[in-house]
Structure formats: C-alpha cells, structure tokens
Image (tube, rainbow, N blue to C red; front, side, top):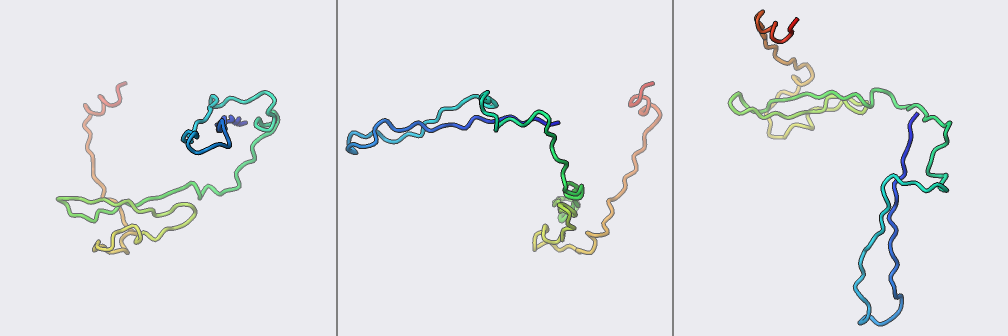
Length: 134
C-alpha cells in the first residue's frame, strides 16, 4: 500500500494599493508565502487518499522498463572514443546508426552481431584465499 504526501502551494501576496498614480507605486515584487513541504490541513480530505484504497497495478509491459545498450569504439587503440548506442528501449529495437556521428567510418552490420572480446583473468590460489577467506 503506498501513501502520498501533499506539497504546500505558495500563495502570492496581493499588492497593497490597486489604484493610484504610478509615481507613488512601488515596483512589483514577487513575494510568496511558503508552508512546510508535506504539511496537510486536517480538513483537506481531497489531498489524502482513502484508508482502504490500493493502487491499481500497472498495465504497462515489463518491456517498457527494459533497456539494452551497445558501446562502440570509433577511435583507434591509442585514443579510444566510446559512444553508447541504445539497442532496445521503451519496447522498441532502435536503429543504432542514428547514434553514431556521420563522419564515423564504421561497418553498421557489425553492430547487430557484435561480440565483446573475452579477456582471461588468472587467479592464483593465494589470491583466491585473500578474496574469499574461510
């Protein structure tokens, strides 16, 4: 069950004099009165939810919250330049070419079937004991 809090909305003070000459009128200032955030008046029943009301479950698919990205190196080995491309997000499979600069000389077919290089990490028994003491 979730609860909500109300935020006090500032109220603008009215000017002291409506009519009068412009020579006597002071410049208009935007002054606001702030209440404490999260304060709710006791008689304000519209701002507080009913005690037994539950929030309706979302009708959106989990595919909308799922996102996949691809990292492309358009530089060389001396000066890498990495660009992150959206592969899938918001229920769509995105065209990754639109995220790359037009001057990048890159084969776009490799973006779909790109596999990251695998680097082997060798851990000795002593290093393993330091990482996972028994």
